[in-house]
Structures are given as C-alpha cells and as structure tokens.
Amino acid sequence: MTETLLAVRDLRIAFPGRTGPVEVVHGIDLDLARGEKVALVGESGSGKSVTARAVLRLDPDARLSGRIDLAGVDVLALPARRLREIRGARAGLVFQDPLASLNPVMTIGWQIIQPLVIRGVPKRIARRRAIDLLTRLGVRDAAHRFDDYPHQFSGGMRQRVVIAIAVIAEPALLIADEPTTALDVRVQARVLELLRELAAERDMAVLLITHDLGIVAGFADRAVVMRHGRTVESGPVEEIYARPRHEYTRALLAAVPRIGGDPSRPLAVIGEGETC
Amino acid sequence: MSRARPIERAALVVAVLVAALAVLGPLLAPHDPYAVNLAQSLQGPSAEHWFGTDVNGRDVLSRLLYGARETLPATLVVIAAATLIGTLIGTLAALGGKVLDEVLMRITDIGLSLPSIILALGLAAALGPGLRSAVIALALTWWPGYARLVRTLVREVKDAEYVDAARTLGVSRLRLVFAHILPNALGALYVQTTLDVSAVMLVISGLSFVGVGAQVPSAEWGAMIAAAANNLTNGWWAVVFPGLAIMLTALAYNLVGDWLRVRNDPTLREGAR
Image (tube, rainbow over all chains, first blue to last red):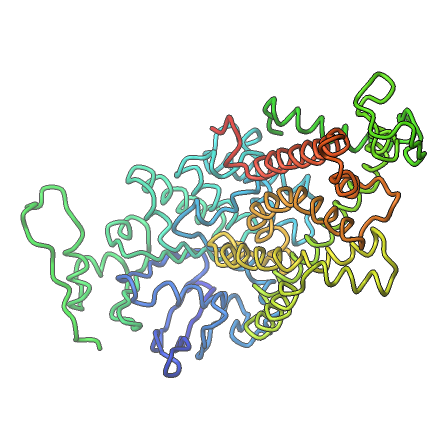
C-alpha cells in the first residue's frame, strides 16, 4: 500500500546485569509506513521506551539483535560514528519532561537551530526557519521569545519548543516518548493536535509511546500493545478499542477513567503471569 | 545582559582599578620603591609618604604600586593554569571511562599530597629562587582540587536529560562536552576559583616569606608583609596597607566571580519571567 519507513524485525534488547546480560525485549516486530501514526502502548517497564530508543541506538549499554530498517538504513549495522547522521535528521525524539530535556543555560533559539547548525546550515537561515516553525506551533511573538531561556516558558510552550527542536531538521519519523505526561489535560490535547497537524503537513510518521490509552484513540491509526518485552496485540485502533483480543488490553482499557463511571468502582486488576 | 548590583559594580571598579594601578604603577609611584633611606625608616603616614615608610625607609605606597605588578599576574597565572589543568583532567576522568578515571584520580591524589612549599623549594633549587618558581610550584599543586571538583560537577550533569536529548539530535561528542555539559557543570568552579584568588595571594606571600618566592628587594605584597611583620608594633602601616591591598583585591575578585556566576546561570538572573 504505502512505502515502509520503519521496519523492526525480531528486535531483542539486553542490558548488562550483575549475573550476565538481562534481556528486556524479547523479539518485537514493528512497522511504520510514511506518514503513519502508531501508538506503542504498555505499562511502565514493558519495554516500549527502550524499543523506541533502539531505533536510534541511543543506549550505548544496550545489546541489540534482530533488524531495524529506517528509511533504507540498516541501523544495527551502521558504524557508531555514522549514527549521528541519522539522529535528528531521519528520526527526531520528543521527551516526556520538556524542562528536563532543555539545556538550562542556552537560549531556546540556540537549541532549536542546533540540529541545523551542526549540519552546516547558516545561522541566519536557520533562525528564520526556527521562528517560522515556532509561530506555526503557536508560540506567540516567536521572534522576541527566540532569545529567552527555557525557565521563562510555561510547560505547554516548552513542549512546543521541544517539538520544534525534534522536527526542525525535517525527520521522516518523530518518536514521541510520553510527550504529554507532564502537561495538564487541556495542554495535552493541544500538543497532540499540533503533532497530528505537523504529521499531516510533512507526511511525517509518528511513533507515540504512552501508557494512556485515553489519548491513543483520537491520535493513532494503529496501536501496538506491549507487555513484559513482548507484543501482546496490535492492529487498527478502532478494532483494539471495539474488540480487544487480549485480556491485558481489556484490562488497560478498563483502567481509562470515564466521565459518568462509578467513582467507587475499584480499578481493574491487571493480571500477572499469562505472558511471562 | 544582567544588571550588576551596586556592590558588584563597585567590585568590578575595584578589580579594574587594581589592574590599572598594576599597569600604570611606575608612572604613578611618588618615590623609587627600592631606594633605601635609613634616615626615613618607619615614618608614619604623612603628606610626603601617604602610607608611611618601611624599616629601610622605602615609600610603602610606591612599593604597593610596584608590588601589584608582581602579586596580581602571579596569582592570576596560578589560578588560570590550575583551572585549565583541573578542568581538563576532571572532565576526562568523568567522561573517559572507568580505567582513565581511576588513573587520573590516582595522579590527582599524588598531586594533592604534594606540599607546595616542598615542591617550591625543589623548584627553587632547580630553577633558582624567585616568583617564577613559586608560581610553577603553586600551579602544580593547586590543580588537583579543581580536578576533583570538576569531575564531580561533570558527573552530575553528564546524564542529564538535556544531554541525552542533544545526543538524539546528532550532536557530536565534542559539542556535547563544550556546549551542553561544561557550561552547566562549571558554575561552582567559577565561585571556587575567585574565592581562591585570595588564598593563592596568601600562599605566594607565604612562599616569599620562607624565601622561595619573590626575593629581596621585591615589593611583592606578601613579601612586604612578611618583611614588615617584625616591626608591627612600631610601624603598623608597613603591614596594614599591603594587607588591606590583598584583602580589597581578593574581595573584589570574589564579588566579580559571584556576579559572573549569576550572569552565567540564566535561572539566577533577576527579572526572570
């Protein structure tokens, strides 16, 4: 149908432990087409973040096996010194906590143009592109705020800055690792909307990592549910919501709070044991 | 740019003034700083000798002006060299992996255990006594403290999320260190180095006192105090004015250092939105 952007095959991730390597991801398959929005869902410790970080080989300690193909580049075979070329340019990353992921002593402008500057784009041109992008992301008076520091921005504005940094080099894939967890609900919705608009405008694929099934429905085309380092279910979002096949997915869905639900109802118990 | 508070502005003025006096000293000095005149020995402050005369009848003010040309550059060279070496070693130790860390920190331990006076004595024997030997000896014994400090500071910052975030953008290792890690790590180092200006001045004077630093008839401030200390009761001015010069200069550099640190850390600036 459409061109494949990211193809992950039988990805295994192990970290060195005290008694030898400990495998935390046990063979994951993941596909993203260009412009496609996929949610990688799972509870804390399910392996969703390390899987996403493996796409850019960001954890130097991790031992990766299997195959990761990002826009025709065999990521796992790439020599370490060439990794820099794909980071930021083929895939950008948005982190959970926008304040922690911004350098406190540099202006936001300096940080936004950095991915361009290190690739040889003249500062003046980079600055113009950054201001346009910030304006597009709804930062008012972007030209003036360009020389402000991260602590001078509100949470929602900071996350827009972080998004600008991740997308300014026009990557074909944006990995968003719980991008809204640190934000209040109203700002969450706006940030997701912006991500959706950007994805559509640039034909950019988005891999959204979240534990919150509540935000997946309005955003992603497909969802992949992970648990204990394995895929337990994947498919179109509507299908997963309407007919969750796996008990774990049902339990995750039941954990989403609903308006009108009985507030005294106990939280769904997420069963242990059936996958490990 | 952040606005300097009045006290910091005053400190900046004093720091610049001291440097200017050091440069212009020979033009401003009312008397020959080395001219011995025993008839004028230990005269109190007067219109002729504003800060009095020392036991050899030399004009204290003129000696102070000449002495600034020895004390100030010597101090700054020690601090600059120690900062440079310490930052280099500390950063390499923090980022270079376990083996390098271990090796560099053991070398640092050796450096820390070297007494500067013994090293200065050795250097004085090898190179001849003088301010130069004292400066080299001090620089060689002063950097290990900075190496330790920088190593700790860099280790605190190197795993920060913004460093990781910069890595995801394809930033090179060198740029990570110089644009992301060091600017965030070194705030506490500025404070330490400027505080050390006064300490280094005092140690240089101590080395001069035991005879391996500035030599007679040098007007190095510490040497002046050391020479005049014997006559404190009947010639306080020959001790107090060089002492005040050291104190005022040290205080000014401390305040300037503090101001630099605040200027360097945007979250500490006033008027933050």
